[in-house]
Image 1: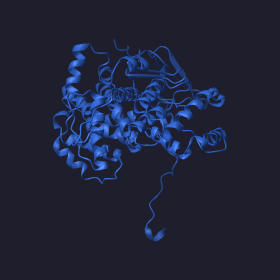
Image 2: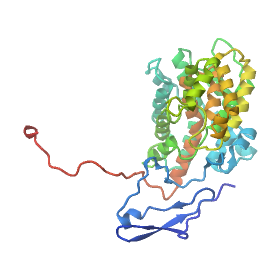
Image 3: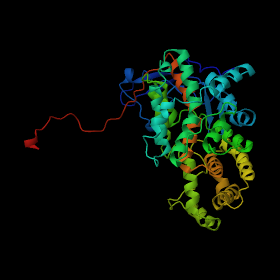
Image 4: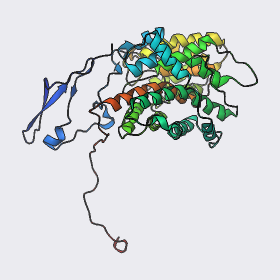
Length: 439
């Protein structure tokens, strides 16, 4: 069963006192099912004439959610209550997608029906291919994805009414199904190859890899090892609580925007190098180091607090212990390298040596700077032959189902309001307009 919602009760409460006036304000405390409880400050401005100040909303719960839970100190990531390592080991991306969208793991009939719906929505409208030809060949794939996904609302008018549960479901399935097709088309367009249509006889990960690397003049067999690794990458990136891109999707959705526009907004937010570009940054770092012979030099630079150089892909802003997703991908990474026989790729040899040092060096161990999910996913994608410009696209592809689940939860929340953050204004006070001749 899905996790119970947070208990909304006026007791216990939190007392806030104004030291200047002596006035006190009783603020309700909402109890979470797991994790920190939350102080309800919605009435604070009305009663005290004060706003709260929290840049980045790092101490503010923007919503109530039943989807994903993170405990960064303990290295815990749960989808609908299930540990991420258990899902990655025992499920596939379609089953996890059903879980995120519906709240519970499916029985066989439910899963078969869901997979059938996704499979038969993978095609895109043929006129949509004309959009790609409007971009330069060297356009960044994320720029293409923002435009193409946003354009879906112009092609699928029958699934843009957010007040119709059936239309919401159809839009959700369409987005999950078409994202691999659109992502692969962005790649094919960039290298001047013809688009490859989806195949109904392949599973989700296999279909994506086939559309990426097949060509019409030759047959292409997808390696089960590579497909399994790609499937795990999709699972591990499917959702991650209220991060920047998820918050963007919710904020856009709070205005009543159609789901395609909301997901396009999420892709735009994910494009930022501080968010979705981390695995791309790992590869750039490896290229900067250059060879195994230079590792000691760069490790020393990373340890020097006065040196701006940072080892990308080690440690995590949220996970202060270990990244539970990284442990899953470490195994998959070594399987992929073994499957491909990558023994003489200098960049990947460098990555494996850097991994060994990070797991043994006291400096990294004491600070818990373990390789994270971005480190391993970057290496896997590189080994598979994907250009670094596609790394963030893969992230967006996987995260789409999480964005949709969060968007749908927001739409169905009767207490949801349009997002309207407040500000601390520090500009000039009101002043009179001065005509040009007197300036």
